[in-house]
Picture 1: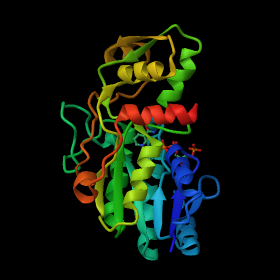
Picture 2 (picture 1 turned 30 degrees about the vertical axis):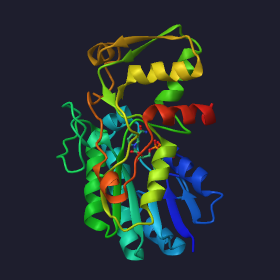
Picture 3 (picture 1 turned 120 degrees about the vertical axis):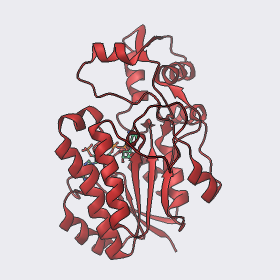
Length: 286
Ligand SMILES: NC(=O)c1ccc[n+]([C@@H]2O[C@H](COP(=O)([O-])OP(=O)(O)OC[C@H]3O[C@@H](n4cnc5c(N)ncnc54)[C@H](OP(=O)(O)O)[C@@H]3O)[C@@H](O)[C@H]2O)c1
């Protein structure tokens, strides 16, 4: 019997990656939705839709992901990143469906120098992080069969850092990139593989889901250019310098790497190294 997946925010990077992996696989039925046909902030519409679709698993890929935009409009971000997952959690419980909800490294303060575990205390420093942390709490409170996967530095078919660097390289000989913020670049395809690994199980709980290996934005940019054979130089700058040049931008975590204890212990599952996943992406995407 196939697994009936209801994917919200299906036009986003992760939603598309899940579609790519499931579209030709009889093990899955993929039912995608996005705004305007299904807005996760509309609690009644969600209940009705879930009653009609009868999914085995709801995968919430919908979110307000523009970090600076969330800073400017926190109420709007809260509706999407916190009340949206609350609505899905309530509907999932009523339909006895599982809920896979995607969260972020921004729920942590982003300091320190060791990768955060799932059990570490949170402490968001931005509006995006606060609203996503509230979304996690609602999922825990109102869903019965839930998985939360925190990911980071995501790139796929959409607007993302990797594509921005490639675009800038077309018109710049040198690009200034921050080199004192460290994290785990993660391809949407790798995250989608992990979601599909987890969804059929009953190993409920909170997971960290990122590619292996830690680097800075500057390291990531150099690797993109190396793989693509692009000659553009990377000028390494500090976060303080970046902020001076872009005073409107929200503060970013200086260290946001995540330890993937739950994937390792529950499923003996490992993500690809970030360089390998990046090569796969650049081979297939560009
Ligand atoms: N991108 C990253 O670097 C990153 C890092 C850490 C965690 N995450 C998390 O990973 C998940 C997937 O991210 P992503 O990069 O795939 O996001 P994305 O590309 O921005 O896609 C999100 C999708 O959700 C849609 N959406 C927004 N509001 C909605 C609503 N009220 N109802 C239904 N759909 C709505 C968006 O539509 P519009 O485009 O029209 O708004 C978009 O199609 C999110 O939970 C995000 O918080 C992402």
